[in-house]
Length: 109
Image (cartoon, rainbow, N blue to C red; front, side):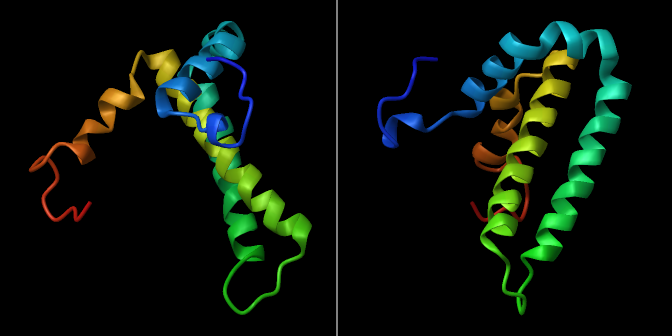
């Protein structure tokens, strides 16, 4: 993945994210294992839940709370990518469940 030179070039695909996470963290994450890493993902999901609560309709969140919401989404995606790497799952391939016509009944994509 090359360094972005503009906002448009900073768009990251699921494959890019999974590769970036693999390159930076695989050795440590793999040593921890899927079970331990899943617990860390759940911790991040809890932090995302709190951020969603802080940004819920009817509440005027601070800029810090808005920024935190964005960061928590990123953290959840990163930890999900980590678990996929540890277990050998290609997330781009996994997403064909939703992108191939007829694979998910009722999906209006």
